[in-house]
Length: 172
Image 1 (cartoon, rainbow, N blue to C red):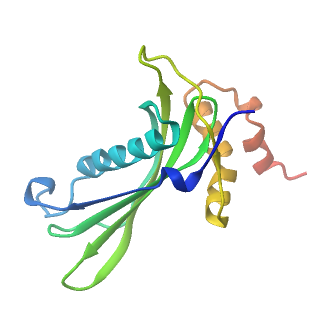
Image 2 (cartoon, rainbow, N blue to C red):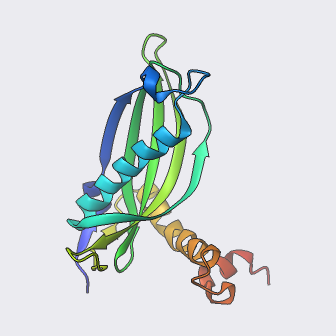
């Protein structure tokens, strides 16, 4: 049995101020800059969980709900949702805060997948993720379906072998 590690131990909170160099011509945070920040927060989370070097394997389901204005404070919160043999899914929530107005909105969220590697760059086993709250359990439960969908879309798993996905559509 693999070692287990509580999901909460992988929690990362990162805060950034949106400066002029980070924005597009509409004075909103550029999507590429947001993706860069998300990748960093998610990588730190995966490293905390695995105690290993990690590499980004995939990014999916990135939602841009609200633009983030120049001068806003951006807070990224990342946590490992589930670990497989060497890979880990990380969920990221992004909050935009306008301090003068006192408003804070969830602007983005995404799932990233990382693979832990050894010094030679070969995949290496990671601990299982242990969910402890209802939200952590819900994300954990959905992670296998999201993983199978990623693998099907990448051509690494036949749709007929995606048992978790098939169960979603089994109407019999």
